[in-house]
Length: 151
Ligand code: DAT
Ligand code: MG
Image: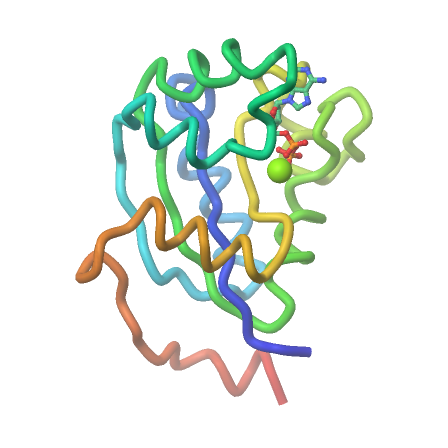
């Protein structure tokens, strides 16, 4: 059980549908610590870098159009096991397969509009936070609730 960092992003559909507070509060209530937060219109080059592993997929151009179609909410979250835990809170990539209770299971219908991104490994968590945030945009702080979350 290691303290990890993950990059969570509310995609343009989540912002347009007024789901920012709902999605953010699920990570907050779980007990993770917010380390960075901003509303951001993503340039094409950054979207392509973020999703570079999917470059050869047929859906790649549509994915880039979607992610750059409006502002996203960029978030850094920290906590014990946060990478895998956040992926569980988010649910399966295809919202039709996502369990009720998960963000995608409760709030989304289609893979191409699945409202939220979460890093898939601790290494990618660090990589993506470095990609989306500049130095000075992240805060190191102590949450007073910490001893009530982790023994
Ligand atoms: P996840 O976002 O669950 O980590 P992923 O990394 O495999 O999923 O893919 C990144 C995003 O690309 C995903 O959230 C939506 C889009 N995507 C993935 N597979 C797709 C497919 N078969 N058709 C259309 N879009 C897809
Ligand atoms: Mg992924």
